Image (cartoon, rainbow, N blue to C red):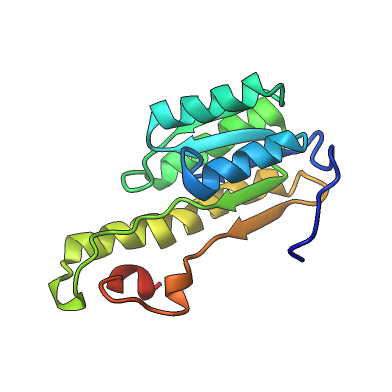
Length: 169
């Protein structure tokens, strides 16, 4: 599996939404998807970071992406419904969804975790992903073979000191 090399145009005519697309794994995935021919929808909370990734994709000559600025911590179910309707209008269907955005929270001992921090992490790392998926499923069903990928952290499988909030997910 580590030696797999995708065919150059394997994602031609595919539309893929990437959450957390402004940095890290999301940024890298978005650029790679575009490199292989996908039209990427960049979702994240920091417009400047999304614009930087957008520019990288365009400057490389890959398909022009779209930007959806959305802070998952404050998003409502209606925000996801509206986003799904916009994607349906602009693209007709959605071939892929990479749930990559996450909230780490403060690195502190478990006994110092406060309810507000726990609720913020649950909202971004669990609730947002579920409600977004629910809203996007109707347009994903219009694609011939849509896929949803959920990323996770290795600390969910093997805990580390002071990573308590992320480890419980």
